[in-house]
Image (cartoon, rainbow, N blue to C red; front, top):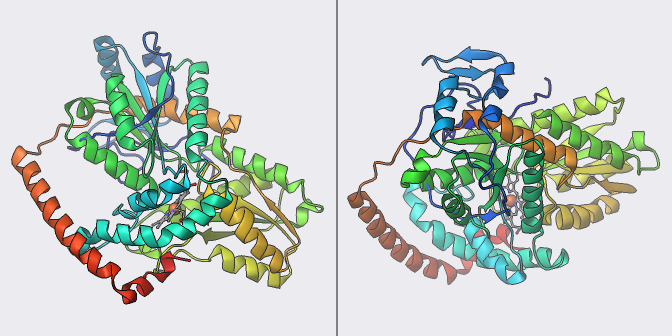
Length: 469
Ligand SMILES: C=CC1=C(C)c2cc3[nH]c(cc4nc(cc5[nH]c(cc1n2)c(C)c5CCC(=O)O)C(CCC(=O)O)=C4C)c(C)c3C=C
Ligand SMILES: [Fe+2]
Protein backbone atom coordinates (compact mmCIF):
# COMPACT_ATOMS: atom_id res chain seq x y z
CA UNK A 1 0.00 0.00 0.00
CA UNK A 2 1.24 3.46 -0.74
CA UNK A 3 0.27 6.75 0.75
CA UNK A 4 -1.69 8.53 -1.94
CA UNK A 5 -1.73 12.26 -2.29
CA UNK A 6 -5.45 12.46 -2.62
CA UNK A 7 -8.45 12.11 -0.35
CA UNK A 8 -11.64 10.15 -0.80
CA UNK A 9 -13.89 12.76 -2.28
CA UNK A 10 -17.42 12.77 -3.47
CA UNK A 11 -18.98 15.55 -5.44
CA UNK A 12 -22.28 16.74 -4.01
CA UNK A 13 -24.02 14.48 -1.57
CA UNK A 14 -23.41 10.85 -2.28
CA UNK A 15 -22.85 9.52 1.20
CA UNK A 16 -21.43 6.12 0.47
CA UNK A 17 -18.04 6.18 2.18
CA UNK A 18 -16.81 3.22 0.19
CA UNK A 19 -17.44 4.88 -3.11
CA UNK A 20 -14.11 6.32 -4.13
CA UNK A 21 -14.12 6.77 -7.81
CA UNK A 22 -17.30 6.69 -9.81
CA UNK A 23 -19.18 9.95 -9.88
CA UNK A 24 -22.45 9.68 -8.01
CA UNK A 25 -25.74 10.98 -9.30
CA UNK A 26 -27.18 14.15 -7.85
CA UNK A 27 -29.60 13.20 -5.14
CA UNK A 28 -32.56 15.14 -3.87
CA UNK A 29 -31.61 16.80 -0.61
CA UNK A 30 -31.58 20.01 1.34
CA UNK A 31 -29.94 21.89 4.17
CA UNK A 32 -30.20 24.42 6.98
CA UNK A 33 -27.35 24.92 9.43
CA UNK A 34 -24.95 26.78 11.69
CA UNK A 35 -21.30 27.86 11.58
CA UNK A 36 -18.59 29.90 12.99
CA UNK A 37 -17.16 31.96 10.20
CA UNK A 38 -13.47 32.63 10.16
CA UNK A 39 -13.01 36.26 9.31
CA UNK A 40 -12.78 36.43 5.59
CA UNK A 41 -11.44 39.28 3.60
CA UNK A 42 -11.90 37.42 0.38
CA UNK A 43 -15.11 38.96 -0.79
CA UNK A 44 -14.48 40.55 -4.14
CA UNK A 45 -11.12 39.43 -5.42
CA UNK A 46 -11.64 35.70 -5.26
CA UNK A 47 -9.40 34.08 -7.79
CA UNK A 48 -10.53 30.75 -8.92
CA UNK A 49 -11.48 28.65 -11.74
CA UNK A 50 -8.05 27.91 -13.11
CA UNK A 51 -7.39 26.31 -9.77
CA UNK A 52 -10.50 24.25 -9.95
CA UNK A 53 -9.84 23.21 -13.52
CA UNK A 54 -6.82 21.25 -14.42
CA UNK A 55 -5.83 19.99 -11.01
CA UNK A 56 -7.14 16.57 -11.71
CA UNK A 57 -5.94 16.55 -15.24
CA UNK A 58 -2.49 15.48 -14.20
CA UNK A 59 -3.97 12.30 -12.78
CA UNK A 60 -5.05 9.23 -14.67
CA UNK A 61 -8.46 10.00 -16.09
CA UNK A 62 -11.08 7.36 -16.74
CA UNK A 63 -14.70 7.46 -17.83
CA UNK A 64 -17.66 6.13 -15.96
CA UNK A 65 -20.65 4.42 -17.52
CA UNK A 66 -22.37 7.75 -18.15
CA UNK A 67 -19.34 9.07 -19.97
CA UNK A 68 -18.30 11.43 -17.18
CA UNK A 69 -14.62 11.50 -16.43
CA UNK A 70 -13.10 10.77 -13.08
CA UNK A 71 -9.64 10.41 -11.63
CA UNK A 72 -8.58 6.99 -10.49
CA UNK A 73 -7.58 8.61 -7.21
CA UNK A 74 -11.21 9.22 -6.46
CA UNK A 75 -11.68 12.86 -7.38
CA UNK A 76 -14.41 13.40 -9.92
CA UNK A 77 -13.84 15.75 -12.80
CA UNK A 78 -16.23 17.06 -15.35
CA UNK A 79 -15.78 18.27 -18.87
CA UNK A 80 -13.96 21.59 -18.83
CA UNK A 81 -16.90 23.42 -20.41
CA UNK A 82 -18.81 22.85 -17.17
CA UNK A 83 -16.30 25.01 -15.35
CA UNK A 84 -15.99 27.48 -18.18
CA UNK A 85 -19.68 28.20 -18.25
CA UNK A 86 -19.82 28.29 -14.46
CA UNK A 87 -16.93 30.74 -14.14
CA UNK A 88 -18.41 33.05 -16.72
CA UNK A 89 -21.82 32.96 -15.21
CA UNK A 90 -20.87 34.10 -11.76
CA UNK A 91 -18.01 35.35 -9.65
CA UNK A 92 -16.69 32.44 -7.63
CA UNK A 93 -16.82 32.60 -3.84
CA UNK A 94 -15.34 29.50 -2.31
CA UNK A 95 -16.39 28.16 1.07
CA UNK A 96 -14.79 25.40 3.13
CA UNK A 97 -16.89 23.76 5.82
CA UNK A 98 -14.92 22.00 8.56
CA UNK A 99 -16.96 19.27 10.25
CA UNK A 100 -16.16 18.52 13.84
CA UNK A 101 -17.70 17.08 16.96
CA UNK A 102 -17.83 20.10 19.27
CA UNK A 103 -17.33 20.03 23.00
CA UNK A 104 -18.74 21.70 26.12
CA UNK A 105 -17.06 25.01 26.84
CA UNK A 106 -18.05 25.06 30.52
CA UNK A 107 -19.12 22.42 33.04
CA UNK A 108 -22.62 23.84 32.75
CA UNK A 109 -22.64 22.82 29.07
CA UNK A 110 -21.74 19.18 29.75
CA UNK A 111 -25.20 17.69 30.22
CA UNK A 112 -26.85 19.49 27.26
CA UNK A 113 -23.82 18.59 25.11
CA UNK A 114 -24.22 14.93 26.11
CA UNK A 115 -27.93 15.16 25.35
CA UNK A 116 -27.16 16.36 21.81
CA UNK A 117 -24.67 13.54 21.39
CA UNK A 118 -26.92 10.73 22.63
CA UNK A 119 -29.94 12.13 20.77
CA UNK A 120 -28.04 11.46 17.55
CA UNK A 121 -29.39 8.30 15.89
CA UNK A 122 -25.90 7.69 14.53
CA UNK A 123 -24.53 7.51 18.09
CA UNK A 124 -27.27 5.43 19.69
CA UNK A 125 -28.67 3.35 16.86
CA UNK A 126 -32.16 2.24 17.84
CA UNK A 127 -34.28 -0.02 15.65
CA UNK A 128 -36.66 2.06 13.56
CA UNK A 129 -39.66 1.00 15.67
CA UNK A 130 -38.06 2.45 18.80
CA UNK A 131 -36.76 5.69 17.29
CA UNK A 132 -39.39 7.67 19.19
CA UNK A 133 -37.45 6.79 22.34
CA UNK A 134 -34.28 8.47 21.10
CA UNK A 135 -34.70 11.82 22.83
CA UNK A 136 -36.11 10.54 26.13
CA UNK A 137 -33.27 8.01 26.26
CA UNK A 138 -30.77 10.75 25.47
CA UNK A 139 -32.19 12.77 28.34
CA UNK A 140 -31.85 9.84 30.71
CA UNK A 141 -28.35 8.84 29.67
CA UNK A 142 -27.03 12.40 29.57
CA UNK A 143 -28.25 13.05 33.10
CA UNK A 144 -26.70 9.79 34.34
CA UNK A 145 -23.40 10.32 32.52
CA UNK A 146 -22.96 14.03 33.21
CA UNK A 147 -21.23 13.67 36.63
CA UNK A 148 -18.49 11.40 35.23
CA UNK A 149 -18.02 13.59 32.14
CA UNK A 150 -17.92 16.73 34.27
CA UNK A 151 -15.11 15.23 36.34
CA UNK A 152 -13.15 14.68 33.15
CA UNK A 153 -13.74 18.19 31.82
CA UNK A 154 -12.98 19.67 35.25
CA UNK A 155 -9.63 17.86 35.20
CA UNK A 156 -8.66 19.55 31.91
CA UNK A 157 -9.54 23.07 32.99
CA UNK A 158 -13.36 23.11 33.05
CA UNK A 159 -14.21 22.64 29.38
CA UNK A 160 -13.23 21.26 26.00
CA UNK A 161 -10.44 22.97 24.04
CA UNK A 162 -12.05 21.83 20.80
CA UNK A 163 -13.67 25.08 19.71
CA UNK A 164 -10.52 27.12 20.19
CA UNK A 165 -8.31 24.62 18.37
CA UNK A 166 -10.79 24.14 15.53
CA UNK A 167 -11.05 27.92 15.06
CA UNK A 168 -7.25 28.07 14.92
CA UNK A 169 -7.20 25.26 12.35
CA UNK A 170 -9.83 27.09 10.31
CA UNK A 171 -7.73 30.27 10.33
CA UNK A 172 -4.61 28.34 9.41
CA UNK A 173 -6.35 26.58 6.49
CA UNK A 174 -7.68 29.91 5.27
CA UNK A 175 -4.17 31.38 5.33
CA UNK A 176 -2.72 28.32 3.59
CA UNK A 177 -5.36 28.60 0.86
CA UNK A 178 -4.61 32.29 0.44
CA UNK A 179 -0.92 31.48 0.06
CA UNK A 180 -1.89 29.06 -2.70
CA UNK A 181 -3.97 31.81 -4.31
CA UNK A 182 -7.28 30.19 -3.53
CA UNK A 183 -9.06 32.67 -1.27
CA UNK A 184 -11.87 31.07 0.66
CA UNK A 185 -14.11 31.55 3.65
CA UNK A 186 -13.66 28.76 6.19
CA UNK A 187 -16.61 27.77 8.40
CA UNK A 188 -16.62 25.58 11.48
CA UNK A 189 -19.64 23.28 11.71
CA UNK A 190 -19.84 21.35 14.99
CA UNK A 191 -22.19 18.43 15.44
CA UNK A 192 -23.03 18.60 19.16
CA UNK A 193 -22.07 22.06 20.41
CA UNK A 194 -21.49 25.60 19.27
CA UNK A 195 -20.98 26.68 16.58
CA UNK A 196 -23.60 24.20 15.37
CA UNK A 197 -23.75 23.07 11.77
CA UNK A 198 -26.96 25.07 11.30
CA UNK A 199 -25.11 28.28 12.19
CA UNK A 200 -22.40 27.48 9.65
CA UNK A 201 -24.88 26.83 6.89
CA UNK A 202 -26.76 30.00 7.71
CA UNK A 203 -23.53 31.99 7.40
CA UNK A 204 -22.64 30.28 4.13
CA UNK A 205 -25.98 31.40 2.72
CA UNK A 206 -25.51 34.95 3.98
CA UNK A 207 -22.06 35.09 2.39
CA UNK A 208 -23.50 33.85 -0.92
CA UNK A 209 -20.85 31.17 -1.28
CA UNK A 210 -20.83 29.76 -4.80
CA UNK A 211 -18.77 26.59 -4.35
CA UNK A 212 -18.36 24.57 -1.18
CA UNK A 213 -15.90 21.94 -0.01
CA UNK A 214 -16.92 19.90 3.03
CA UNK A 215 -13.89 18.73 4.99
CA UNK A 216 -14.39 16.57 8.09
CA UNK A 217 -11.68 16.95 10.72
CA UNK A 218 -11.71 13.18 11.19
CA UNK A 219 -9.04 11.43 9.11
CA UNK A 220 -11.03 8.18 8.96
CA UNK A 221 -14.71 7.89 8.09
CA UNK A 222 -17.14 6.55 10.68
CA UNK A 223 -20.92 6.44 10.62
CA UNK A 224 -20.76 7.97 14.10
CA UNK A 225 -18.66 11.00 13.16
CA UNK A 226 -18.36 12.14 9.52
CA UNK A 227 -21.41 10.06 8.60
CA UNK A 228 -23.55 11.74 11.22
CA UNK A 229 -22.54 15.26 10.19
CA UNK A 230 -23.12 14.47 6.52
CA UNK A 231 -26.58 13.12 7.30
CA UNK A 232 -27.45 16.39 9.03
CA UNK A 233 -26.10 18.37 6.09
CA UNK A 234 -28.02 16.28 3.59
CA UNK A 235 -31.26 16.90 5.49
CA UNK A 236 -30.58 20.62 5.47
CA UNK A 237 -29.73 20.78 1.78
CA UNK A 238 -32.83 18.84 0.81
CA UNK A 239 -35.30 21.64 1.42
CA UNK A 240 -33.35 24.73 0.50
CA UNK A 241 -33.40 26.23 -2.98
CA UNK A 242 -30.06 28.01 -2.70
CA UNK A 243 -28.24 25.13 -1.05
CA UNK A 244 -29.60 22.49 -3.34
CA UNK A 245 -28.08 24.39 -6.28
CA UNK A 246 -24.76 25.05 -4.61
CA UNK A 247 -21.89 23.01 -6.08
CA UNK A 248 -20.56 20.93 -3.18
CA UNK A 249 -17.65 18.50 -2.91
CA UNK A 250 -17.37 16.25 0.10
CA UNK A 251 -14.07 14.86 1.29
CA UNK A 252 -15.11 11.69 3.07
CA UNK A 253 -11.77 10.65 4.53
CA UNK A 254 -8.16 11.63 4.08
CA UNK A 255 -6.16 9.30 6.37
CA UNK A 256 -4.15 8.05 3.38
CA UNK A 257 -2.90 11.48 2.28
CA UNK A 258 0.84 11.69 2.11
CA UNK A 259 0.96 15.01 3.98
CA UNK A 260 -1.04 13.64 6.88
CA UNK A 261 0.93 10.37 7.08
CA UNK A 262 4.25 12.26 6.98
CA UNK A 263 3.07 14.77 9.59
CA UNK A 264 2.09 11.93 11.93
CA UNK A 265 5.42 10.19 11.31
CA UNK A 266 7.27 13.46 12.07
CA UNK A 267 5.51 13.76 15.43
CA UNK A 268 6.24 10.12 16.32
CA UNK A 269 9.87 10.34 15.23
CA UNK A 270 10.38 13.48 17.33
CA UNK A 271 8.68 12.07 20.43
CA UNK A 272 10.65 8.81 20.27
CA UNK A 273 13.82 10.83 20.82
CA UNK A 274 12.64 11.74 24.31
CA UNK A 275 12.95 8.10 25.45
CA UNK A 276 16.21 6.95 27.08
CA UNK A 277 16.39 4.17 24.48
CA UNK A 278 14.23 5.28 21.50
CA UNK A 279 14.50 1.95 19.68
CA UNK A 280 13.03 0.05 22.62
CA UNK A 281 9.82 2.08 22.87
CA UNK A 282 6.65 0.44 21.64
CA UNK A 283 4.49 2.70 19.45
CA UNK A 284 1.01 2.35 20.90
CA UNK A 285 -1.71 3.67 18.57
CA UNK A 286 -4.88 4.40 20.50
CA UNK A 287 -7.98 5.11 18.43
CA UNK A 288 -11.43 6.12 19.62
CA UNK A 289 -13.58 2.98 19.47
CA UNK A 290 -17.00 2.38 17.97
CA UNK A 291 -19.45 -0.41 18.82
CA UNK A 292 -18.63 -3.64 16.94
CA UNK A 293 -22.12 -3.62 15.38
CA UNK A 294 -21.20 -0.47 13.42
CA UNK A 295 -18.51 -2.37 11.57
CA UNK A 296 -20.08 -5.83 11.40
CA UNK A 297 -23.73 -4.96 10.84
CA UNK A 298 -23.76 -1.44 9.43
CA UNK A 299 -20.59 -1.69 7.31
CA UNK A 300 -18.71 1.16 8.95
CA UNK A 301 -15.32 1.37 7.15
CA UNK A 302 -13.75 2.94 10.26
CA UNK A 303 -11.82 -0.13 11.47
CA UNK A 304 -10.41 -0.96 8.02
CA UNK A 305 -9.42 2.65 7.43
CA UNK A 306 -7.80 2.82 10.85
CA UNK A 307 -5.74 -0.30 10.19
CA UNK A 308 -4.69 0.96 6.77
CA UNK A 309 -3.78 4.32 8.27
CA UNK A 310 -1.52 2.69 10.86
CA UNK A 311 0.07 0.54 8.17
CA UNK A 312 0.88 3.66 6.17
CA UNK A 313 2.33 5.53 9.14
CA UNK A 314 4.51 2.53 10.04
CA UNK A 315 5.59 2.17 6.43
CA UNK A 316 6.66 5.82 6.41
CA UNK A 317 8.57 5.34 9.67
CA UNK A 318 10.30 2.24 8.27
CA UNK A 319 11.38 4.24 5.24
CA UNK A 320 13.13 6.53 7.73
CA UNK A 321 14.87 3.58 9.40
CA UNK A 322 12.52 3.47 12.40
CA UNK A 323 11.54 -0.13 13.07
CA UNK A 324 9.95 -0.03 16.52
CA UNK A 325 7.27 -2.51 17.53
CA UNK A 326 3.76 -1.14 17.33
CA UNK A 327 0.22 -2.04 18.27
CA UNK A 328 -3.31 -0.64 17.87
CA UNK A 329 -6.03 -0.56 20.55
CA UNK A 330 -9.39 1.21 20.92
CA UNK A 331 -10.31 3.56 23.75
CA UNK A 332 -13.29 5.47 25.20
CA UNK A 333 -16.01 2.85 25.12
CA UNK A 334 -19.37 3.96 26.47
CA UNK A 335 -22.52 1.97 27.26
CA UNK A 336 -23.50 -1.68 27.56
CA UNK A 337 -22.58 -2.99 24.07
CA UNK A 338 -19.39 -4.59 22.74
CA UNK A 339 -16.89 -2.14 21.21
CA UNK A 340 -13.97 -2.66 18.85
CA UNK A 341 -11.19 -4.65 20.48
CA UNK A 342 -8.59 -4.81 21.83
CA UNK A 343 -9.44 -2.25 24.49
CA UNK A 344 -6.70 0.25 25.31
CA UNK A 345 -6.89 -0.24 29.09
CA UNK A 346 -6.65 -4.05 28.81
CA UNK A 347 -3.73 -3.94 26.37
CA UNK A 348 -1.78 -1.55 28.60
CA UNK A 349 -2.04 -4.00 31.50
CA UNK A 350 -1.04 -6.94 29.26
CA UNK A 351 1.97 -5.08 27.86
CA UNK A 352 3.12 -4.22 31.37
CA UNK A 353 2.81 -7.88 32.34
CA UNK A 354 4.76 -8.91 29.23
CA UNK A 355 7.65 -6.74 30.34
CA UNK A 356 7.30 -3.78 27.97
CA UNK A 357 9.09 -0.90 29.70
CA UNK A 358 8.77 2.03 27.27
CA UNK A 359 5.59 3.04 25.52
CA UNK A 360 4.72 5.94 23.23
CA UNK A 361 0.95 6.57 23.02
CA UNK A 362 -0.26 7.93 19.67
CA UNK A 363 -3.85 9.22 19.47
CA UNK A 364 -4.82 8.53 15.89
CA UNK A 365 -8.53 9.11 15.28
CA UNK A 366 -8.66 12.82 15.91
CA UNK A 367 -6.46 15.78 15.00
CA UNK A 368 -6.96 18.12 17.99
CA UNK A 369 -6.25 17.80 21.67
CA UNK A 370 -9.47 16.96 23.46
CA UNK A 371 -10.77 15.33 26.61
CA UNK A 372 -9.68 11.86 25.50
CA UNK A 373 -6.07 12.87 24.94
CA UNK A 374 -5.72 15.31 27.83
CA UNK A 375 -7.64 13.35 30.46
CA UNK A 376 -8.12 9.75 29.36
CA UNK A 377 -4.65 9.15 27.86
CA UNK A 378 -2.51 11.64 29.79
CA UNK A 379 -4.06 10.89 33.16
CA UNK A 380 -6.04 7.62 33.34
CA UNK A 381 -4.05 5.48 30.90
CA UNK A 382 -0.71 6.86 32.00
CA UNK A 383 -1.48 5.96 35.59
CA UNK A 384 -2.67 2.49 34.57
CA UNK A 385 0.44 1.91 32.44
CA UNK A 386 2.81 2.94 35.21
CA UNK A 387 0.94 0.72 37.69
CA UNK A 388 1.22 -2.16 35.22
CA UNK A 389 5.00 -2.04 35.02
CA UNK A 390 5.67 0.41 32.19
CA UNK A 391 8.45 2.74 33.26
CA UNK A 392 8.88 5.24 30.45
CA UNK A 393 5.67 6.79 29.15
CA UNK A 394 5.32 9.30 26.34
CA UNK A 395 2.49 10.70 24.26
CA UNK A 396 2.54 12.20 20.79
CA UNK A 397 0.73 15.57 20.69
CA UNK A 398 -2.29 16.01 18.44
CA UNK A 399 -1.55 17.58 15.05
CA UNK A 400 -3.55 20.74 15.86
CA UNK A 401 -2.03 23.43 13.61
CA UNK A 402 1.17 21.63 12.54
CA UNK A 403 2.11 23.53 9.34
CA UNK A 404 2.76 20.47 7.11
CA UNK A 405 -0.62 19.07 8.12
CA UNK A 406 -2.51 22.31 7.52
CA UNK A 407 -0.85 22.70 4.11
CA UNK A 408 -1.96 19.19 3.22
CA UNK A 409 -5.56 19.92 4.23
CA UNK A 410 -5.47 23.05 2.07
CA UNK A 411 -4.22 20.89 -0.82
CA UNK A 412 -7.06 18.43 -0.18
CA UNK A 413 -9.53 21.31 -0.51
CA UNK A 414 -7.97 22.53 -3.75
CA UNK A 415 -8.00 19.03 -5.21
CA UNK A 416 -11.66 18.64 -4.29
CA UNK A 417 -12.83 21.92 -5.84
CA UNK A 418 -13.26 20.69 -9.41
CA UNK A 419 -15.55 17.89 -8.30
CA UNK A 420 -18.10 20.17 -6.63
CA UNK A 421 -21.58 19.57 -8.03
CA UNK A 422 -25.01 20.92 -7.30
CA UNK A 423 -27.61 18.90 -5.56
CA UNK A 424 -31.01 18.51 -7.14
CA UNK A 425 -34.00 20.21 -5.56
CA UNK A 426 -36.33 18.83 -2.96
CA UNK A 427 -39.67 17.29 -3.63
CA UNK A 428 -40.98 17.47 -0.07
CA UNK A 429 -44.53 18.78 -0.08
CA UNK A 430 -46.18 20.99 2.53
CA UNK A 431 -48.46 18.10 3.41
CA UNK A 432 -45.49 15.84 4.09
CA UNK A 433 -43.93 18.51 6.24
CA UNK A 434 -47.13 18.92 8.27
CA UNK A 435 -47.38 15.16 8.77
CA UNK A 436 -43.80 15.20 10.00
CA UNK A 437 -44.64 17.80 12.64
CA UNK A 438 -47.72 15.92 13.90
CA UNK A 439 -45.79 12.64 14.01
CA UNK A 440 -42.97 14.34 15.84
CA UNK A 441 -45.34 15.81 18.46
CA UNK A 442 -46.96 12.41 19.09
CA UNK A 443 -43.59 10.72 19.43
CA UNK A 444 -42.38 13.40 21.82
CA UNK A 445 -45.47 13.03 24.00
CA UNK A 446 -45.21 9.24 24.31
CA UNK A 447 -41.46 9.39 24.59
CA UNK A 448 -41.62 11.86 27.45
CA UNK A 449 -44.15 9.76 29.36
CA UNK A 450 -41.98 6.69 28.90
CA UNK A 451 -38.85 8.55 29.95
CA UNK A 452 -40.61 9.73 33.08
CA UNK A 453 -41.53 6.13 33.97
CA UNK A 454 -38.02 4.97 33.16
CA UNK A 455 -36.42 7.63 35.31
CA UNK A 456 -38.38 6.30 38.30
CA UNK A 457 -37.25 2.72 37.74
CA UNK A 458 -34.06 1.65 39.56
CA UNK A 459 -33.80 -1.40 37.30
CA UNK A 460 -33.45 0.82 34.27
CA UNK A 461 -30.83 2.90 35.96
CA UNK A 462 -28.89 -0.32 36.59
CA UNK A 463 -29.23 -1.32 32.94
CA UNK A 464 -27.48 1.90 31.99
CA UNK A 465 -24.80 1.56 34.65
CA UNK A 466 -22.12 1.44 31.98
CA UNK A 467 -22.87 4.98 30.95
CA UNK A 468 -22.14 6.20 34.44
CA UNK A 469 -19.06 5.91 36.67
C1 LIG B 1 -13.08 9.49 15.56
C2 LIG B 1 -13.43 9.97 16.69
C3 LIG B 1 -14.62 9.59 17.44
C4 LIG B 1 -15.49 8.52 17.30
C5 LIG B 1 -15.45 7.39 16.30
C6 LIG B 1 -16.49 8.65 18.32
C7 LIG B 1 -17.55 7.76 18.54
C8 LIG B 1 -18.34 7.78 19.67
N1 LIG B 1 -18.25 8.61 20.77
C9 LIG B 1 -19.21 8.29 21.70
C10 LIG B 1 -19.44 8.90 22.94
C11 LIG B 1 -18.77 10.04 23.45
N2 LIG B 1 -17.80 10.75 22.82
C12 LIG B 1 -17.43 11.80 23.60
C13 LIG B 1 -16.47 12.73 23.33
C14 LIG B 1 -15.69 12.74 22.18
N3 LIG B 1 -15.73 11.84 21.12
C15 LIG B 1 -14.79 12.20 20.20
C16 LIG B 1 -14.49 11.55 19.00
C17 LIG B 1 -15.09 10.39 18.53
N4 LIG B 1 -16.21 9.80 19.01
C18 LIG B 1 -14.16 13.38 20.68
C19 LIG B 1 -13.11 14.12 19.93
C20 LIG B 1 -14.71 13.71 21.90
C21 LIG B 1 -14.29 14.80 22.84
C22 LIG B 1 -14.80 16.17 22.60
C23 LIG B 1 -14.27 17.12 23.64
O1 LIG B 1 -15.10 17.70 24.32
O2 LIG B 1 -13.07 17.31 23.84
C24 LIG B 1 -18.22 11.81 24.77
C25 LIG B 1 -18.16 12.88 25.87
C26 LIG B 1 -17.04 12.73 26.81
C27 LIG B 1 -17.30 11.61 27.76
O3 LIG B 1 -18.25 11.68 28.54
O4 LIG B 1 -16.56 10.61 27.67
C28 LIG B 1 -19.06 10.70 24.71
C29 LIG B 1 -20.09 10.29 25.71
C30 LIG B 1 -19.95 7.22 21.15
C31 LIG B 1 -21.12 6.56 21.86
C32 LIG B 1 -19.42 6.91 19.89
C33 LIG B 1 -19.81 5.91 18.88
C34 LIG B 1 -20.95 5.37 18.75
FE1 LIG C 1 -16.76 10.04 21.12
